[in-house]
Amino acid sequence: MRDHLMKPSRISISRRRRRTQAGWEILQFALYAMFMVPMFLWMFINGMNLLRMVQCTQIARDIGNEYIHGVDYSTYEAQSVAARLAQGYGLQVGSSFTGNNAANDGNGGNGYVVLSEVMFVGNGSCSALPAGTVCTNQNKYVFLQRLDFGNKSLQINGATVATALGSPTATVNTSGYVQNYLTDPGAVAAGFGNFWQTQFTDGQVAYVVETWFASPDLAFSAYPGGGIYSRTFF
Image 1 (spheres, rainbow, N blue to C red):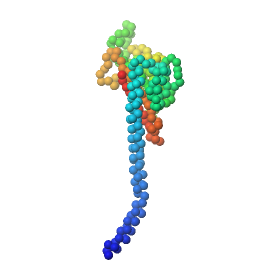
Image 2 (image 1 turned 45 degrees about the horizontal axis):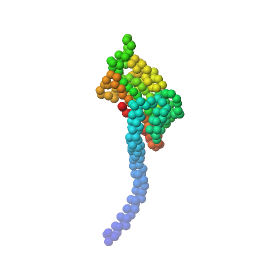
Image 3 (image 1 turned 180 degrees about the horizontal axis):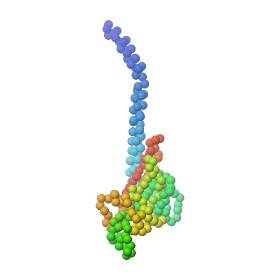
Image 4 (image 1 turned 45 degrees about the vertical axis):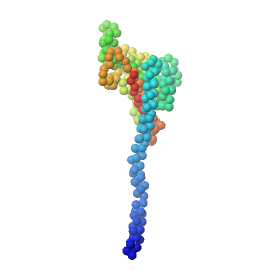
């Protein structure tokens, strides 16, 4: 008898509880989504860029391999080859030009490439100067050549890309060769020594390839798509 009389009361309480709790699941899901959706977007964007980094590093290595074997990247033909190597990543080199252009960097697109040849200046290198000429850049790293092409104004996450080596302010000819690299302070590669624990020997040369590829296709509303920076030494 007692059990029979209590059942309606229990049912009534359960019904009242369901009415007062109606809608809480939606609120809980909304609060959960506020934290989880941005995290999933971040994971997706960075995961895709990590996959692309492998390909972009290989692009930099392919360009560098041709560079150290004498390919003249101041010519349109060579820059067009680089654009084909970076197919799908938006590296643009503009319309064709004749002769040499060491700074074909005013293009659009999502890619930018910088090639540098750097040498350490020791006593032996300075001995090539005429007697009485001061070897201003002795015991420093200097640019022998600087080439760049693509989109110099490229931005990744709102920041304009910039080389980690610095840029020569000395006179550079149309083939990218730096003039007076022994005596002009503007030829010094100020940031180059930061990458080495052991100083180069006199006359030792290194070739550096830097590439940037933005990923605007991965952007979601307020979340930027980021991009990839690759630096390779030869």
